[in-house]
Picture (cartoon, rainbow, N blue to C red):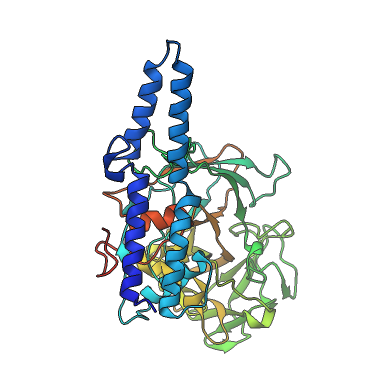
Length: 465
């Protein structure tokens, strides 16, 4: 049986062989040190072969050479080499998986959790992901959230190096759209003409993914939270617009704690005038929960009680809208299972809605957005306030917890704001390399759109050749 050290050496050598072929190396025999050089020679040849009796034969032969080279570095050819290398690695460490994608996922766990005696990493690709920027004339106030970390806390490095854009193509007034569930066209740059340029990270012209898909806005009712905007409740009198808010005697799907005592509603009010947004099409009377004077307050919803489960293969975005009134002080905490985020009310804008989001985790802590790291016995969704301060009050609304959508290896959510998006609202950004690329990680990303745990320096046995 192959030793793991030998299996790692095979992996690195196979990646180097593929990389040299793809960059036009082959001992310099294909016209330069990169595939862009080969492309330039090819185009230059066509530029001068414009006359003569044999120009058709010259062009046909050149096209044939290009076709053969493109096939040499195609995903299918590269995979034909890498698949048995990964199968050999799996056999060496006793894994039963037979698909390369499954093996890579097992190896990611093995490296991250030190199952082979220590944490192992490959050299990172050193991405510089652009800031997702809203168009200057956007009507809507929502945001696009992106997750680029895996469940182990390592950056996902299989996305395309290119400019991307989003444009709203369906809103509440157009193309049978729904308020809060606006549809965006999500586009990458134009794809390369063939595999020669498909991963020429610094080549000219720069290749693109060719992605052209859609991303739909999400409202609270799309997620796993029941009664996310408190629109279902029991009161002695039905609240009316422009009238005094009324006290509830029950809020459907939620356990309410005031001063640590369950099912207590003292100084809590249902408000139909101050709310963040409707939770969905059926939310005809949007409502918020107003904490008028309670110093300690918590609302709790059990996932098990409502037969809700998390899909462990996807990360989850979560947020709660908080309206700070009366210069409130204290801390507000949002929990999803074992994961929580906390913000001080003093840091929030006063007399305005503020968003407390799981997206506020930084760098490697963003692994907490994956269900593996949310797991606990009897998991709940909670919003808790530890104090208000003198004269303060807080409104709670729009508790969203929903799976993100994978596009080009990263994970995205389009979450509308208090003002809905309209058609032609846009977002744009550019993802680039901050410095030189890696070899092994780039090859795995090219073939499988998967990557391994990574760092600026690879561990011994996994270094680029």
